[in-house]
Length: 121
Image (cartoon, rainbow, N blue to C red):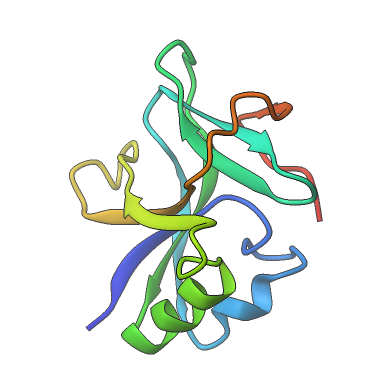
C-alpha cells in the first residue's frame, strides 16, 4: 500500500537527491495551503508552519511504498531527530487527502527564509 508524500527540496525531480525516490510514482506538482514557508538549513530546506505567510510552498506529490518510506526516513535522519514525517495540508486537487512531508524537528526560526520555492541543488 502506498502513501502520499509531499517533497519540496532536494528530493524533487531534477534535484541532487531525487534518486532516493527511485521506483516510486510521481503523482503531480502541488502547493501547501497558505501558512507554510521554507528555511535554508544549509544546502537543503526545511518546511515550517508560519501563520503570517500568505502563500504556500511548492513541491511534488509522490506515491511511495513502505520500503521507500523506511529508506527515506533513514535518509532524512528521522531516527536521529533531524526531521519527522508529519501531515501537511495541500491545496486542490489534493485538499483533504492524507499527505505527509518531512518537517524539521529543531527550531529553524533563525535560519534564512527561502520563501515558497526551493532553488537549491
